[in-house]
Length: 137
Image 1: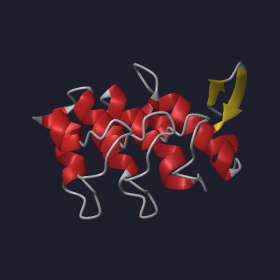
Image 2: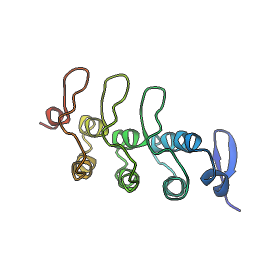
Image 3: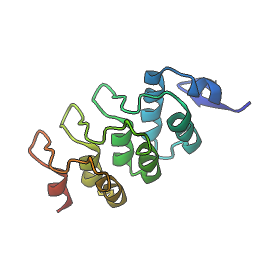
Image 4: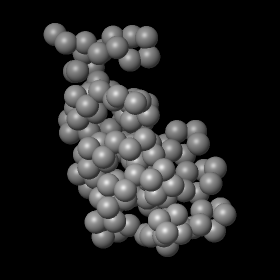
């Protein structure tokens, strides 16, 4: 059986996909923040677990925000396959959405992918009054 090391402990894929929704969400956000995330792990969590896909860190960051900031286009696409994903959630510190974060960090391909979503709200404002459109110009 294959094991994956997370938080200084080894887990089987079965352990991962049967975690509580919050724990799976925590692992998903943490993995999205890595320079070289484990795509097999992410895919299994997104496709086979009861993950809370909109789980937020203490600062309000979700997996899609993290993946958008880090430039993980394939992860963003995978996350968008979950119907309950909320692409318009804002972080707690600056009220930034995944679209704003992708735009701010010049992640052009992710911006394109997010703009294809009919529910995306491009005119949402950060605490500074900025929108993703301002950042893109």
